[in-house]
Length: 147
Image 1 (cartoon, rainbow, N blue to C red):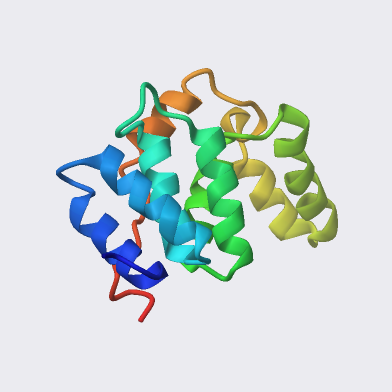
Image 2 (cartoon, rainbow, N blue to C red):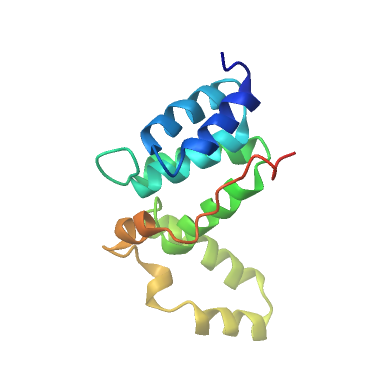
């Protein structure tokens, strides 16, 4: 019998490549026991659409927020990847942080930010969900990473 968050997490980790749907089940059980790494890896499965009908970066974002609130750094990294692509943010939300940084910066740094924050930083791309589903840069957390 598999009991406890760590055992459930380890079982899910072993199943992830062979049976993502089964891995998602075990990650969900481990997450319900408070395992933040399980939330992170479950988010990756959801973002990529493994074991589900389609990729869902918005649901993955919710899982990563929960993991990040528990201090899971890989979830924070994955959230950064979504925000960088404008996924899960409206155009206004995507622009607000850039405007604040521009106004808070001294002249040379502000000019540099304006130069590098072209149109892609100001609008949500129509292919954003597709890019998130490909998500080759999402970082899973191995059982040893949190130990």
